[in-house]
Image (tube, rainbow, N blue to C red; front, side):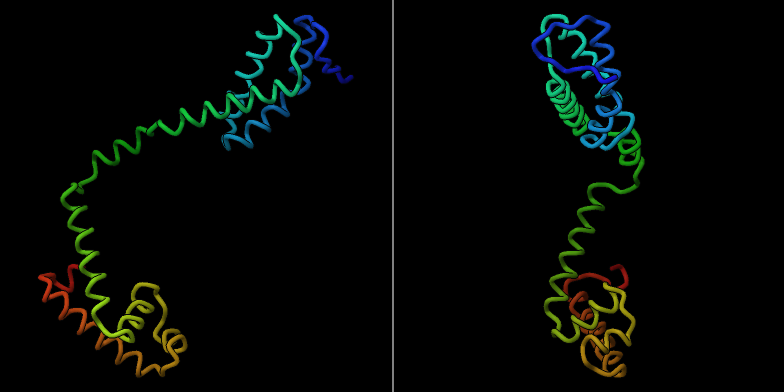
Length: 177
């Protein structure tokens, strides 16, 4: 038997409890759509239902108001969660052997590598990028670049030599990158 959600009449605590029981599964599903976590969805829905029961003692509230309360509690949960940091993440950062200096050195090395890649001829750069960075086989690179396999091998060899020369001019060892 479905209970009426009449906003003009005052309800007894038993009627409010029956209304909440009737719609509780729907509220949890709605909360899950908002927070994408089943445990958090149950918590959000329970908080909203508890607030609804408590506030309904003073005035008659509607089903729409209950859904609005779930939405409000879900937004509050997401705001709190956004500022939380998992303890595992903190421990991982603290136990990481990398230092700020190491990260800065790697970033600088990437910048130098990018700058040197821009200085070599376009065919060299394209062949090297497709084969080394994108991971295409030499035969696939040949098809993409409309060249035969031997030409691609020659381009890769020349590209590596040119890039190595540029990196040595910048003070970097080719094998370190």
